[in-house]
Image 1: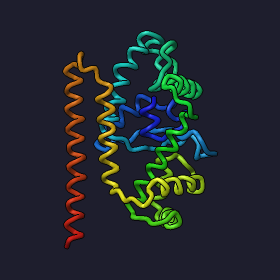
Image 2: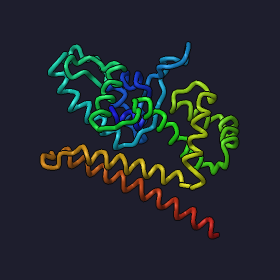
Image 3: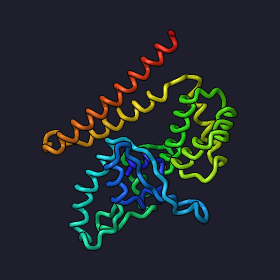
Image 4: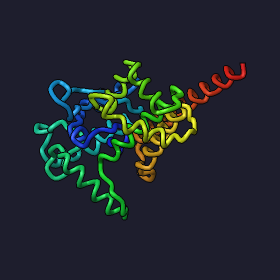
Length: 251
């Protein structure tokens, strides 16, 4: 649940509505994209399907959860005939999780962690959108919030991509994230490929932490080897692009 909130920036209702079928489709893609149902908006804007890119490692993690952990819950509760198709289920009934349950689960985790600050599921969404804007600022070398706003307005494809990932119907509702992103960038330029590499590393570390090394199966080892290979390829590509850029600057 937390990993989904982190990598998709989805609303809690959208996480609750995520299906196993969407996970299976994403896992079969060369460049995985997770289908989410937009739960905010009016008319045709509401309940439309949007796609959010995720890493191959995260796609495999979600697929493994669906085929292993989730299947156990289905067998123990409602049975395959009554399977609701949602990825996240109640362990007691086998029904799809309700959005309020996700809120309650986050609250339980906050108390268990001993945090004394306000934390909610929606904060993952704020972080996701801010990170997207930070990466775009670096990619397009934008110097000010006004310049970035102008870029979004003039580049139709970029505007569509941002709204697609975030599930917003207009750029006006994204204005506050532009300022947050510039505050965090703070004049320090990071290449967008470095942002991609960091995401790949975080995904791999998350997968490692979830493993029970004392009881690893052949499938676990095979999945880990694939994830390591994907990470190596991602880092090699980033390094190669960085070297090419340095050569161009010297020339």
